[in-house]
Length: 142
Image (cartoon, rainbow, N blue to C red):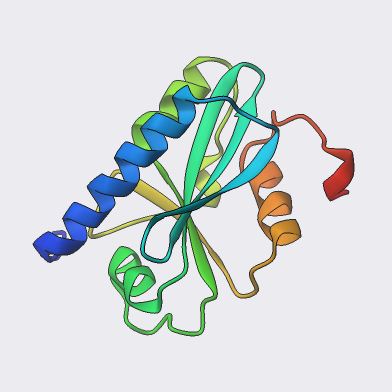
């Protein structure tokens, strides 16, 4: 049974989701960070072939604890999340998003996440390539 999530946090998740949906319809690059779309949340925008992806990068400890349903993760630097429908759509288009490498949120069952002990652009890029194997190699991040 999923634990109750405060309404304000659910609203924040919906705002981030709307921003991710809009980002997938905008011009894309191989790998780019957006500005904040909500307090403590930026988007990581990329594409696999012609399939756009926009994952959310959460950095506030209280948000990370809420998504993980575990207050014992405050040492975590960030959380990278993708929603299930987006991952399934990319996989249907032939670009596997390896959800087995993500954890599933108990408080938001259609949200999958990966935790970061250290946050850097290079670290996020490396993990993104592991999670979405069909991303094209990028020489600047190598």
